[in-house]
Image (cartoon, rainbow, N blue to C red; front, side, top):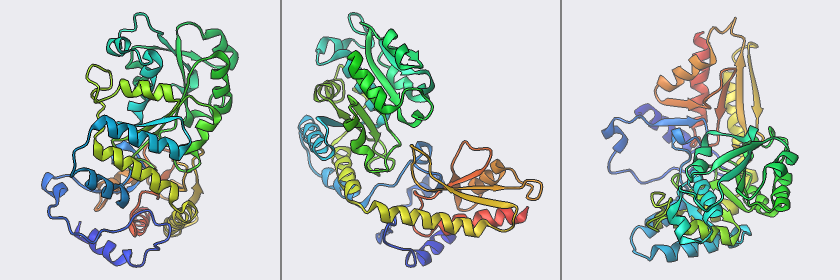
Length: 395
């Protein structure tokens, strides 16, 4: 750790300030909790993955959290006020802060099932007397649809708009669209929103990892989706344990009734306290105001630093790429001729993870080594570049 700190102290002064995602704090922490607990800090060259604790909160967010931590308020009053403020910023009828995007999916589904009927709210996941089905494209099924099924509903799969129209009926409570899979399904986002209106079924779009670009925060409400969710702790850089649910006013009011601090409700354990509420508000306000173009240029600069460093021979190829939807920011893809550099991509990732400092790259890829630069702190792109270069040269 000492070497990494020394390196960063020397490099922060030289790092460009315009567009840089992070700033160093002058305050020296009183305790090194991670060291005391035996937990190893990492350099996050992956991205906003929950397993790597997603993003680092903005200074404005921490200021808001510290402010709220010193005062008591009536929680429902603050929930409503923050929701109304966020809704006005994003052009939605209603909004609320949830305990992450998965929580928002559960609460939004519950809202479509119960409305504002307290007896139904208390009954779910027993759906006696309620609708019982949610329509999803088969290609949009994903690991987080457990958040839908928590309410007791059955997910009914379809492939075409005509299929959805045939399957929709008295038991259809909602239609859910997984935005990251927009390129895979036959029904694209605009058509999906229109389809819901045509068959009179609320539409919900999961955009958890889809900010930036900043326009996405308003895009899907404008398209006509009934409900939209974003993660709070990814690109928006609010509290990792918070999320955003926005959309139709009646559905947001119903979702609030299904949520904490209401006692006999499916969302009672999905608690959002005053610190997260004002933290999310500060994060959204700051995200809307920042210079996104300058930030993008900084990410491209970091990609180039790593790419230039690892180009040790013609056997190594690098390519900047931007995922189409989720994590829509510059990344670096590194490949090499494994007959000349006798290392697999997983082996290099393992060596980065087990080294000092520990570095995590984009997980789940076996045909390349992918580096996400947007969660790096100033100067860390040089550490990542140096380490990958050293590992490749040893082979």
